[in-house]
Amino acid sequence: MNIINSWQNTNSDLHRKYIGNISMHHVLEATLELHEHPQFASLRYIIEDYTEATNTPFKHKDLKDFSNVVNLRSRTKRNLKIAIVSRNTAESSITAIDFCEFMRQCHYQCEVFYTFPDAQAWATAS
Image (tube, rainbow, N blue to C red; front, top):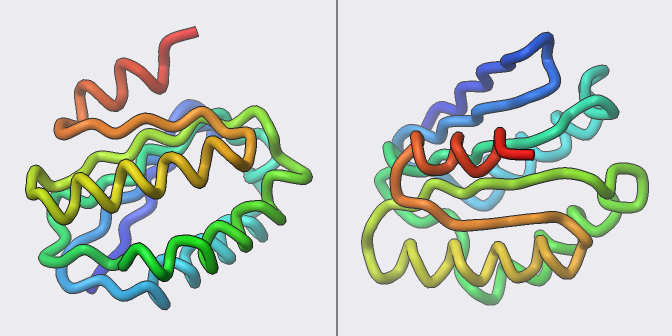
């Protein structure tokens, strides 16, 4: 398991790549660390890239618990775009779409993509 954070544009944009076998715990830990990062307040978008993950870290039942953490984040940071780059499998796609729906309930813009260039084009559009 590896999570690589690549900050771009003077740390206002983040590409986070998940590699290998990822657990819900890993994603939650990375999310909490991001909340504490000094650049979180100026963050415009996050591209969550799961294309090199070897599994789907969330089960549908986990999404509600995870969304509670995100909901807390959304109280201080509402104008955030989240692009999810999903593996192109049925399980990954369904989970990514469900995850996006929870993000939208937290007042975030969220879309699912299957390639990084498509996600980046959406995230950087005005």
